Image (cartoon, rainbow over all chains, first blue to last red; front, side, top):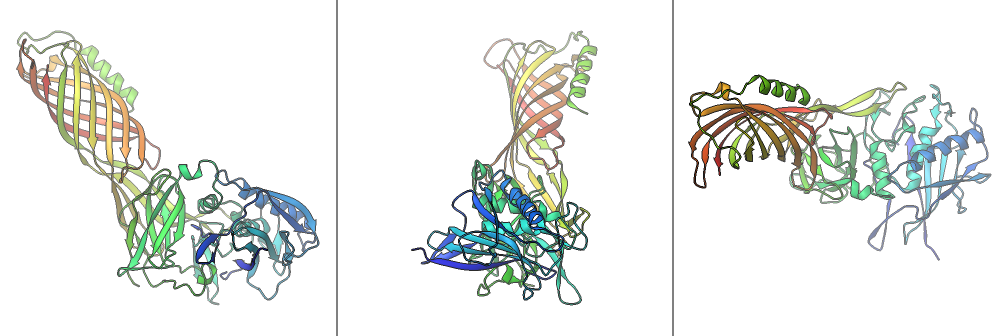
Length: 330
Length: 229
């Protein structure tokens, strides 16, 4: 009998918090296990009811486009299959993956969320449901509706979670007069805070998203054609946990990032176009830490943004020499 | 100047040079192998600029600059070895291997969150493996032993990033000239000639390390010692 773990991943928040990329992991008997689908195609159902302005058919068409966006990543081996409409709720634990609208006034800043049932012995996703909060106005207009949130954009983000991706911190925010956080800009669909109403830019995956999903479901020559930069971030000689490390390729303009995920401050950024990269390290200060890590993780945000003083070369099909970045306290 | 124009200029120069040799010119060997080794300076050049952009939160597709970068390759010493074969008193062909170890520098500035500006670097190993045609300009001879020449050619560019685990390849073309000064010429023995050579060249690189896909130009000057066998 399989032992199952049910988890809810809050995904996109509205004007308040809710990369590289983080892959979901579970720890079983001291071993870290990556959470992912292990059988393709992944079958999904659409809930058979809509909301004002979006019929069930509109919903299915928009979400299908979002699935197709991920499936089109040439360096990732993933495929999806629409299995039909259903009366089941996204919150039901019923062995089928359902996407649909639900009203959840209690989550008044959450546009959508993704939940999982996972085999904790293998990390295989058994079921994943996505709900879109119907307390918000939604649009499936091709050009976007300035008064409504773009369903396809939010669906692309949530399907990233559905695949096992966590949040990316590639973005900049500001805190407004009410204390809410607003996105100024982002460099990844998997940034935890949604763009505003009428903005459709998250329909298109960014290099950080593509690197993340390709590292999780590598296809073809992805691993042999891309490179890795790894290293360590320290402050006063002590490893920094939760530092956001960005690799910028001046030739491609791509930004791909990761976090230091160990107490030693180690990081690894995979899926890089081979070549030299500028490495920039910043504290996780553009979103709630809880959007990225467990509350128990000792995330260090008390240091200044810094660049590494050497270019970090990502060789083709492997990792370059490990780099060491020392940051200064704020 | 593009490569075709450079070659055309060289051909015009060769055609107009005539074929009259001064009676007192040094009797340099023809159809004998000549080896050459030397050193010099390879000039730097720009590699382009790029912004690290995010997507701005607005319906209009504007960018948001996280930070800016500009890149160049620095000036560096070069070492070279050449093997030449004079086909006649006028023309020679030669192959050369040139190595330099310049720094690739990328300046990161204007960071949105105020990170101090910095110039990040890596030191690369750069090789030119090329072939040239030399045209000896006896009409412009200085004294009896110093003969100017013009040269043009092209070949293979190979660059190894720091750590030597990533290779970039491309093409290199050059045009330039210089002067050869014969210290020794004789008609017998293993060593038939020896002398000094100075070169000035403009190199044009395509491919290799480039952040904007445009050809780059570099100037190089070098001095060498040659020995003919």
